[in-house]
Length: 271
Image (cartoon, rainbow, N blue to C red; front, side):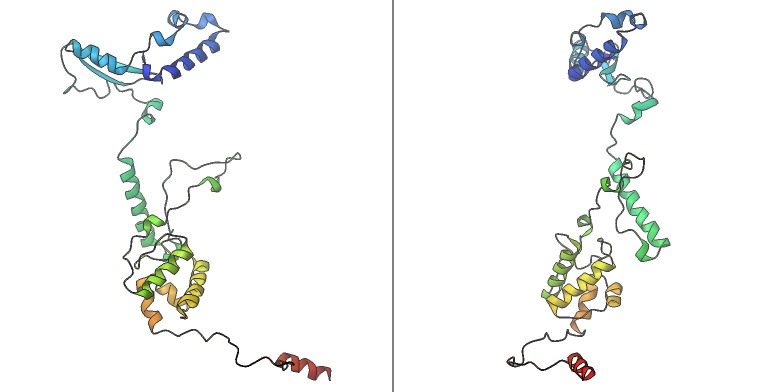
């Protein structure tokens, strides 16, 4: 329970708060609590304690304390700390202390879990039911009513999944550009799956329209669903049907344009 000088400001606030809370009940305060008027005089930097022990040839093991603004220390007058079995001796066990330390290996385990979960779902669900992205979060954000706050959930990052090969032909380059524009990504590789990058049926229809405009080729929706990557779709565009020619002016517009078929019908019914 050594007050930590590196948390000096926090210690002052904490002790002041405790004194204010107990001011109404002084009989409940211990002698040490009544004697603490300036925590800065008691605070000690962990480095100072290490230097003090080293100057005497002693060993010291320091760790966090059950009190947030303090640290615990074990001093060994018979030598260094290395080789001692200190697990469970100087490390607080149980309670809320277990969440005060970070876990550097947690990120790797989380990535492995996310990947294995998608593989597990692919084996048991149809492809259109497999989530395009899986995110691991520490806890679900809740609103004032205790329900999941969907607006506070992090957005999936599909750009990290776009790692396919670069386009090899101008046609593949234009397709990759169309894929990226529709999906809202910086780049898309020729092997990247459209639906794995967050695409869905509505975006697929938009992409087909973009292909019709930029490449002048018609793509049926069922063909695109069967070949959702640039590399798989490009061969179907080369031998596929071309779009119909755009409407252009064939002759000069007369002063009195002829009636259309529907207008002729209306005129006939009127007569």
